[in-house]
Image (cartoon, rainbow over all chains, first blue to last red; front, side, top):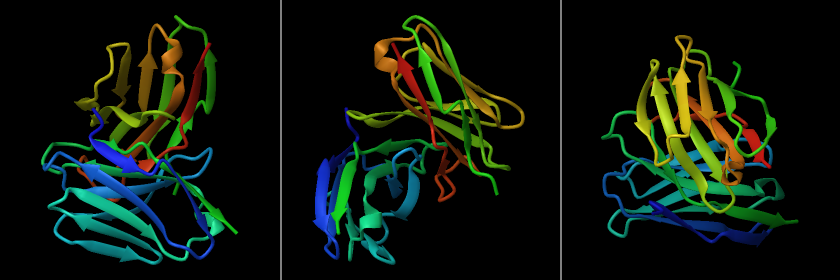
Length: 114
Length: 114
């Protein structure tokens, strides 16, 4: 059972446009929601993360929007650039359980066209 | 500061064989987690080790096992390989055994089972 559902599977955006990736979760014990960016041949790298006590977090061109009641969160990439072309994964984890265990979405392949 | 190092980068094995993958975490990191990444399933959690003890385990068969040494280096073993075990195996390390921004992935070991 997929604990975190991610959509769309792939996304094509023009340079300068806004890229939006959505994720939904079921487990209310999750209280840490990171987004990872992965380039071919590399491991995922942390992009931005949010905890459910805030509804939005912005770092540069990347923004996470979080809707606790709907159990949904999304990544917005403003002014998308060709260098943003990568696969993006949302994830969720719970600080209530000991240790690190993340549940990942299935990924979104983003292509930014020049 | 060196990142998470995984060796080897690529492996080709025959069905029925066994394989051992290695992960050297960032210096000072004591938590090491392993994930299996496949195109259809995304990243699936295998297990986490902290101070030489397995702390968490995902839903994988007993053919998948691991261990951690006193220097925090970790190995993952897969016995009786199946075609479906072909995947990118990722290791991630973190400073402490709690959810944190310090969760860093290596570039992975690409295992192909033929």
